[in-house]
Length: 70
Image (cartoon, rainbow, N blue to C red; front, side, top):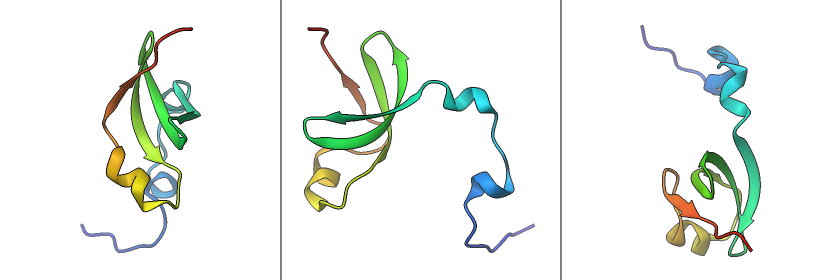
């Protein structure tokens, strides 16, 4: 079956709420993004929340970033 729709997949196929517990919005090097906590100081980018095309050249969804504790 092929489903043609403009609705987001989350509206049609609801996901488990536990997937959202590890997500958080953060700003990394001036780039706002939605990330998943992978463990400790490691994060995986889920979505870049920016209108600046340069940010999409620096980072991409699925890329892992590491934040050193201060």
